[in-house]
Amino acid sequence: MPPFGFSRGSGPRLSPAEIAQRKAAIEERYGPWTAHNARLADSVWTVKEGVANFDEKTRRALQIAHDFFGRDLAGLRVLDLGAGEGGLSLEFAQQGAEVVCVEVREANIEKARFVAQILGIRNIAFVCDDVRNLGTQKREFDLVLCYGLLYHLDAAAVFGLLGEMHRLAARVAVIDTHFGLAAE
Image 1 (cartoon, rainbow, N blue to C red):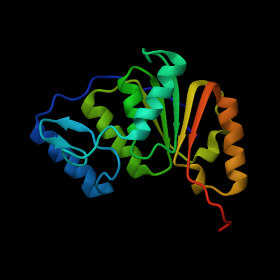
Image 2 (image 1 turned 135 degrees about the horizontal axis):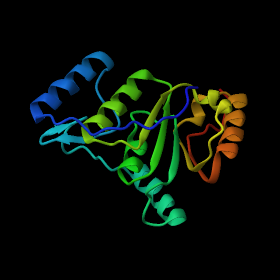
Image 3 (image 1 turned 45 degrees about the vertical axis):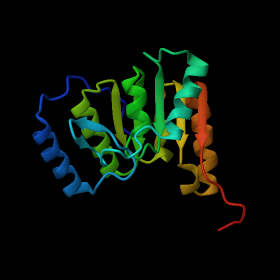
Image 4 (image 1 turned 30 degrees about the vertical axis):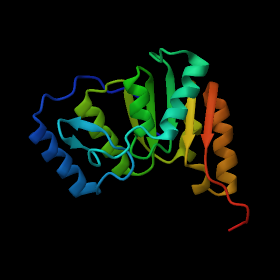
């Protein structure tokens, strides 16, 4: 897994039409957004205006963070595993946390990176890699998030990842996943 490094610099100064054009190029290459709906400019959204942008899982994740770390999340070190299109990662970064967003699908990383660039979010690093490759990382995080990921892994990988999460989480790890009652 590549080393974590936070992107620096400000977001581009683009018109809504230019942002819509860049968004269309991202969608042409990687497909449309399916989960994370962010307002990029006047009347330009990743999904579309009116679609829930601040879902219940995001609310709960933020509430957990506020309960453990207080209202100000500035400087909080967050690792978001299996981040999808980056909804949780981007929200925590917007609230001042230093976030590492790990996602195996390049399309999702590029979508999240695009949103961060357009919104000028600089305190976020994107890692396109499999979460099973965390073993080389030495850095600890205040908060490790693992949402909707474990059920994609076999049992050995789940227990390996849980061990790595324990090692990397200096204070809190949050796991939200589906499970099956029957082996498949």
